[in-house]
Length: 425
Image (cartoon, rainbow, N blue to C red; front, side, top):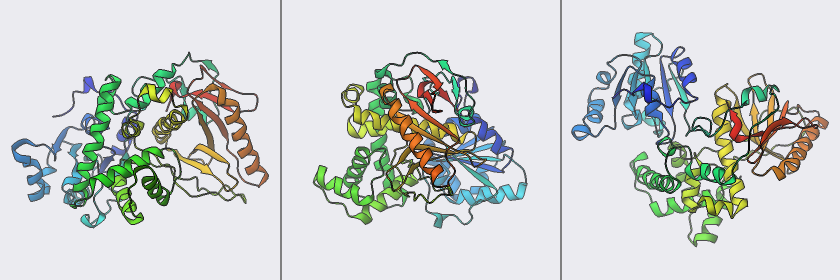
């Protein structure tokens, strides 16, 4: 059923979907389960075909297998939801786009990526892919949106008082997460949904390649990833963590295999290293920083509540960073920027790097408490100066994203301070 547009909660990705439909024959919106892909895609569609509809013993799925071309008949843009259930639909869409030679014909959604062997053509130039994430604080109404990340990255914001922030509210945003169905739920209910999500993922993982996996060991790996949220631990370290904490043994090949499955189910959303040549002699590490697609899942795996986070500020800080990284990715991608992290061999780090289309890059440190702003600003200045001294290109903008700051402003040292609850794209 086409979405009731009067009840639709606007998403930041909407503008990009419209733009892509005017450029490409089809758009594929990928992302984690329950992130709102179908709702958003339906909002932009004029007809739809739901592969996973259980009606009449999953009649739609069987029809798609027998006659993919019939699935594509209907008013455009036509939504094909959960296309990966019948991978042949990808080629059918690509062929029909070529045949019609028109823009904006189809919107595909997918909550997992099948092995490429099931698809004959990449779809390059015909089907554009978009990554959809759970809701940012601005989308859920928990950020005032007083400051624009795009304007900030272009060194163009006006200082302003934004109001006090409640520490417990920040903890609740993390535990609740950004799943649309959770936004208006009580914290206890949202925690149950996140736990249900983990169980659903473990069940769905069995179907990704049609194989049976050890759900217990998968869960152990997920718990280890949760314990190592917002860090750059290796697979070997994850194996050691499982052995030390859970007294279980998982070999490196199994870990790599399970991580690949989680990636293809969009359960993980790791932060790539900043690898652009900064034209200096500084050696930059090339390790990804580990993140779940939403901090609520980390909380579910750690049995974390707002009270527990408030009583464990170290874990609170790591999960606050995860929440900020999720939001920064959503905001940055809306203006075609990319988000990374930075770590060099002198142990200088930057929590988030945003690279702009013009090649400039901006450095962000993320701190929960206002008492850490000076320390974060000093760290940013050290990285800036070391890159400059080495003959490289330093960040054009430096900023501390803070949880408990009540204002957005520029410090005398040139470093901005902006509350995450006052940020938008």
